[in-house]
Image (cartoon, rainbow, N blue to C red; front, side, top):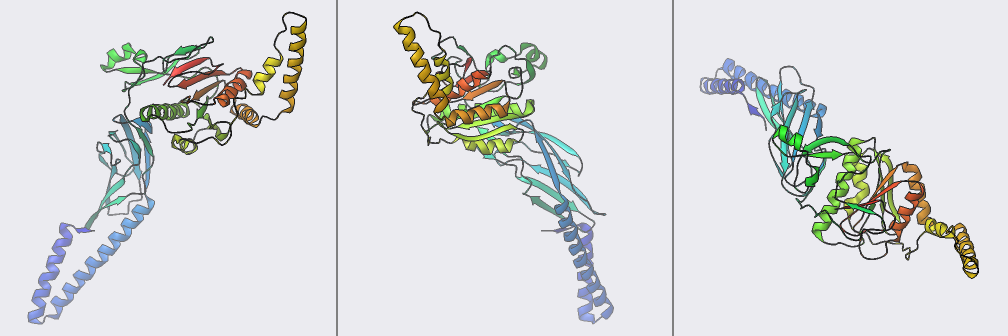
Length: 411
């Protein structure tokens, strides 16, 4: 609702005084003057509302955040710029409105200026900005209006969790098991950020910490090569909430970091022996979040019945023949059977994975899985198809491992 300024209030008081004089004295001049002032105020109020509508129509808001996927209670810096067409004679001030679950306030700025402020998201879940508040004023009226359609970007907040103990189980067969975010050969430091609850203490950079008098951790690049392929194995059923939270945080954090630090990342989402979604070399975080679908459990519609896949069968068919006699005859027959089976038997899941790997054109695949009890042959087939292409395979899971991976990171 519009509010009159001192000028408009003075004119209204003068019109009222002329009306009081005109009625008892039957003075046409005073009545005409009072009516003219009233009409003038009505016209000015209509013009003010028209100009305000034009301002709202031309309003554009550009927000830039450090990250859009974060832990509960983590500080995030917001840079916002508000632009609009300001009619002559009007003054505009803009005030950004943080999410309802945020602690922190934004300063008021003029159109065309950039405001920088810091907020903390105190509740988990998905949230958006409340909008932008505009305060408009001319010589006669003023009004404060909230434009709620400018709520981008969307934020995803995960509960504050605890870090793992850095060790898992089941690393056998020559695989190397390392702590979360431990450095591999070929990795380098791409930057530093403040330490957060749940970060690996081994990644604290003490030199930067000493200079800034606050804990800072190293942010590592991926292995040398192109954009990484992130493969996500959707769980078949809901599990422990804390484990699911750590799993979701790891997946979303890896995707956002890959998009921010590289020229896109490829995403492969599987559920059992079925590819749910595949996005090759995308740079759109919203497409990725839509493809992940909140990482909701999905019951597999296709079962591979622990089939090792054509890559394993082909490798078995090429097994070296040691010895002679009956053993050599047996191996020769077995190799012929496996070779024929590999050639003739259709393997749609392995073929779909093969096409996805070809389109991704990545040298590293990061497999995120809860490794739930049951058939994991679909992951075995993904690993084998990747190893055929010489890709580095990193498994990221709360515990356990699968054959053929190069490294295991414990979530």
